[in-house]
Amino acid sequence: MNGASVEEICEAAGFTRGAFYSNFSDKSALVLAIISQNITRQVVAAKRAIAVIKPASDLSADELVSRALTANAEAGREPGEGTLANRELLLHAAGSPSCADRI
Image (cartoon, rainbow, N blue to C red):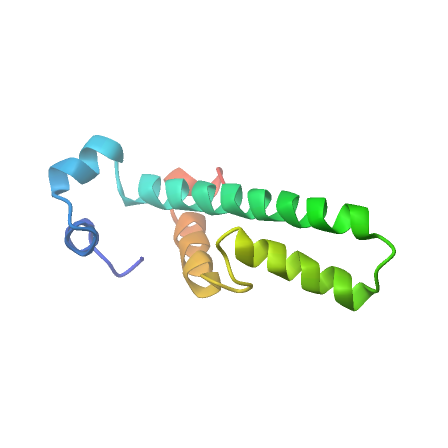
């Protein structure tokens, strides 16, 4: 993300620069939107995992973890999926004055 220009991002996504700027003021705004979307997905996955685990409290720790991972996968995310990309997004946001105080 840090090395990609707005033009490169638009090309990879199949959008024009005008489409980009009609939705985001700059690359940092895009980064914040992606981070927010990722957090929302993680919360949904965690809630599903808790819903699966809560009624099964008599199970072993291994079975509870297994059920939580299954619930996470069913929410559309595998454990660790996107970890490197998420770290890069957070690094960009931390180094951007317009983002740093919002993460």
